[in-house]
Structure formats: structure tokens, C-alpha cells
Image (cartoon, rainbow, N blue to C red; front, side, top):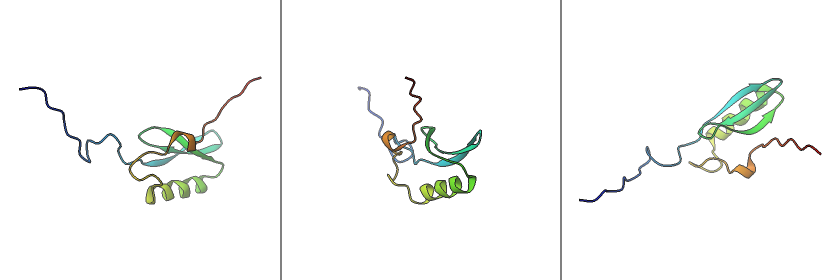
Length: 80
């Protein structure tokens, strides 16, 4: 008997439903996506960051999948 491939269901699927939380970084508030730990957006006020994370949690823009990398807030330090 050969090896069988494990079937994936909702609990063991590759993409788990993303969760969003607020993290303080110095004087800024960051909205972070949980399975990837990527920064989605940066705010100066905590209230704005909390409202944005609640909105993403209630109505996920990409359903069960995380937000694509090109839509995330990437800070680039460009030195010339």
C-alpha cells in the first residue's frame, strides 16, 4: 500500500482566516495581519488604527486569504 496524500479541510487548509491587531511602534500605531505578521497600514492615532483593524476583521477584503503583498505598507529606506 502506497503513501496516501492527506486531504485538506477548513481546519488544515493552507490559508487560515487572517486576523488583524494594533501594535505600537514608537509614536506610530501599526495594523498588523496575523498569520503573516506584515504591517498593513501605519497611523498616528490609536483610534484610527483600531477602527481600521475592526473594519478589516468584520469585512475581510480577500475573504479567507491574506492581503496581497503589493497592497501592504512597505517602508523602503532608499539611500542615494
